[in-house]
Image (cartoon, rainbow, N blue to C red; front, side, top):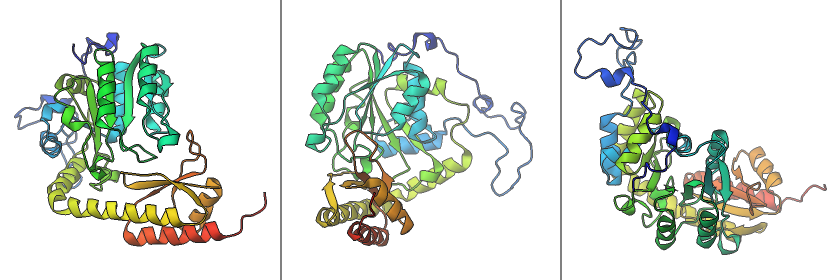
Length: 360
């Protein structure tokens, strides 16, 4: 069975937009796209439309993750791939998406915008927000309209990871009926890869990747969807004409060229600083809980997340208030910064938590 067997029926014959750059070939004179023939900056000419899926960037990303270029879609962050999958697989008012809260908020936003029903299998708060695989399987059995299953590992905002055995159970249950999307935005910080080794074996598995985290390109918005070539071909039909601006491609290629020399030390530092933050938070009076994390952040609980968030901001330190997410009352998430930034955060938090609380 093909991964395309459960896309939206009305999109199976979709003819994609034919962008002008796809027609370029080896033409020396290009007069088909209504571009200006003059560049505003001769040193960095931007007057021509870029390749919709730049071959050099696809090759570099494929090499990085050990797949073929035909298995890679590159777009404007992972968010674009999430949105395209929602649009491609979910018929508004009919199909459903399974998520495991508390988790990355864009799954819910994209599903809502598409009019897809949201089915929840909450993470197990009693087990450090571990995946409740039995709950996932029960929802799948009860809800035959589920077309997409989103699993975030390491999970944002809690930092936990999914086991290979749990993933394999979900893949077995979804064969022939749903696409399983494993979001590995923070995968560079874990010890063992989860989903990538299974890509060539399981057609209904897709993996989200990004250069926004370990590679330091958050402002460039370079995300990727990895999957079966048939899936990638379908997603490319759904994309906007030019999702990768030429300067973004250049920045990504430059970062990828430097990665072998720079990335191992950066990741090692992030892991070391993550451990330092977690240990310091666990010892700090006023911190009620610190959840284990394999990402580049730590999630922890205080008595009053809103007050603590405001006080830290007043001290010049911004963290993320995640207390509105399910089972995360009092929750704050702090990203791993430089050693100096982390020390400033710990100092500020200690002062904030030791200060007398104002009467309500």
